[in-house]
Length: 343
Image 1 (spheres, helix red, strand yellow):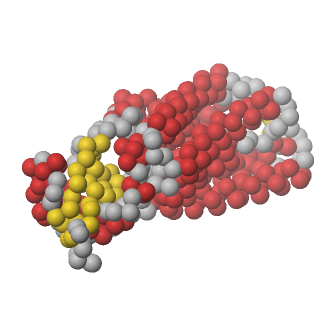
Image 2: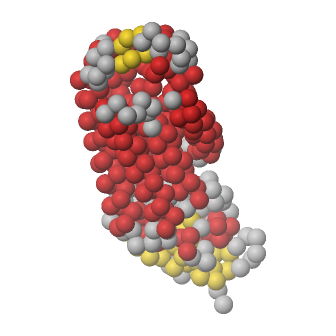
Image 3: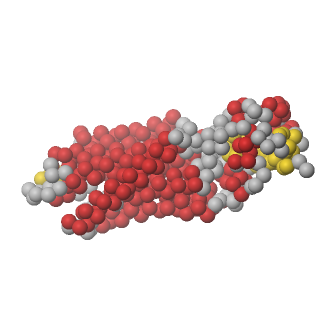
């Protein structure tokens, strides 16, 4: 038992460090689409991992029990973060309204309250084993209670709904990068498989070590890699449909709410904005350095057709081409601006 426990602890440490690194990356980009749900997902995963590690190294029954109860912060709120990210990623952020948020977070708070005030609804019994050692060696939990199963059903529901929406949006986009597909498949498969494996093996008495927090950490890191390596977050279904990263000429996409959804690096140079920070900004801010474009856009986005813009750094002149864009699963349509170098 010593070797598996040590290997599990080492894996937890690696997962904690990876999650902290991912959290650092997302903190700097929290205002982007999907950023806040990712913070919830990563923050919940980090708490879950840390208290699980404390449980495995604790020689105190009381400390081990407290750590076990604190894991429900992650158990309850990590699926919520994943679900909210799925909604934003698939362009369904209009679903994220007060009634939905109230249901999601109320369920999480109720489960965490039950862990402390009605422990029997989570575990039918909690006893000292009388043995010496750490974590599972000194504490024995009875069968899972009705509260646990109610939460598990709720968590699986939002996980599967989120997974279905993500996969539908991903494979429905004609220009999705292979890296995006791999990242999101990892993000979808790992937590559900890990949790299902733990529940099945634990019920059979084969495995006492919970794989779920590690699997959710893998999922969260996969999303972050996809988000900032393959433009997973920046590429909403609308942006994924046009594949800005595959274009050499300057190109940028504005949705019907007058928000700059995505742009490539050449377009950022022409607009005079930061390519990392500009997505999600209002067109008034994004077009500030190109007042003629702002004037045409204010009249009608299509009025920018044929406008000549110059790159303030190179002096290159570009002719603006305008194209209407719609995508399956996107909450809004948009306008694609492609800048052709003037001959």
